[in-house]
Image 1 (spheres, helix red, strand yellow):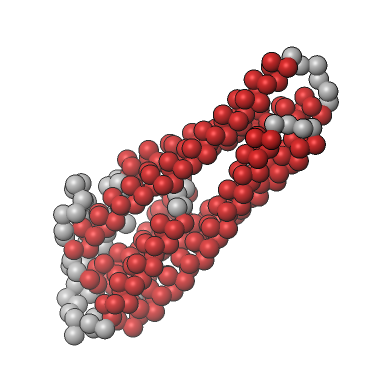
Image 2: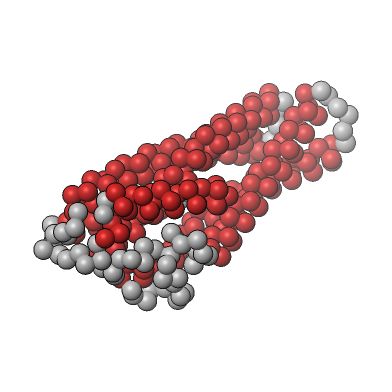
Length: 270
């Protein structure tokens, strides 16, 4: 990929900013819940009005977190992905599906527009997604497991100290959401690993001669990867991407040389 600005960066910037706000409300909810547990566990003499206010704010924070999660996952994320796909297809076929101008160096500029370039661009997308996801894996597992345990413990003490049923239910719901998020990420990451291997086998077989029989497999690989992205609803960590970008660009160029991708401008369909 080009070292320039990604054409859809601004859309993902908005999404990532909203993700941070979402996490902020989760932290606020945790701190308020933890405060209530301390008050109840150690029998601090607190005005009931103050206690109820903290409880109310804790419920509101959890509800806002849940609402933002829904908006980010089911409104902003699909919108970003739709724009990304339009630019991706424009690059492959020199079409005009997107309303943004594309840097001609953004996707494999040495390749002529067509189905083969679509396959190579798809391989590149999958390669970057998998490697950024691999770098995220440990932190994702650690963070989610810690959050799950924290909210289960808080919910346990909430039940023991007869907290509001509503906030205990929401705490358990949040635990379930993070468990689901972790499982989904692991499946998503494993599928991307399989798609990379599929691309390697396909491009190794194609070599310098693209046959009509290869086109359905190219399209299937594209659809499998895109369906996995939309199923997973995973926002890749932009900081990790920036850290890895140069090394991954270099590795990608080596992959292109290995599979003869850089020398396939004149590829024809037999």
